[in-house]
Length: 195
Image (tube, rainbow, N blue to C red; front, side, top):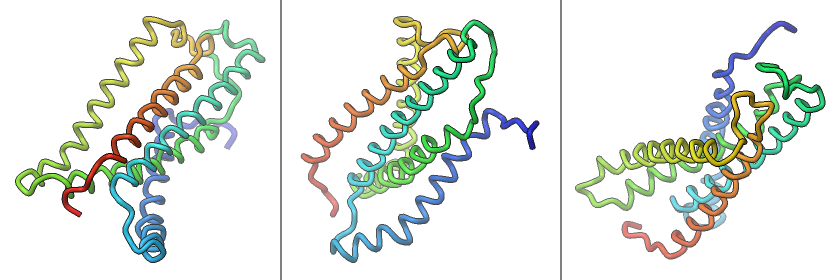
């Protein structure tokens, strides 16, 4: 109804739904078709690379949505009011979250498969822990980046309508793009040990 408010934390469900639907589609349709027509399976590093690409696209879409939200905030003169809500639906975030979910559906299973396949037999049980370790390192690096942005720019003030969160998303998009290029370079030189 008109008075229903979407709880902030519940928007993450779009990432989970997108991930679940994509994994189902990949396992049941796309990967079998790939193997049938290409006569070989998609490699773990190809999965990870596709996931990286979707993650970068997700951040770019978030930057565009935030730019629109800031434009609406300025149009309604909300940058001078604390805790003011921009008249924009939360569902504008769904495309970006769906792209992030698709990225996760490629990225995380690809990572787990790569580590499990390439680690020596004596380390097989710890190979999946490397994925959790990389996620933890990523969260810490993300916090460090946000702290650096807060110290060096005025993009993240207390009132988000006065800030430039879109610039933060563009920064993450650029860093993600550079990381993707570095990944392509490293993966092109990698030789699989346990094919």
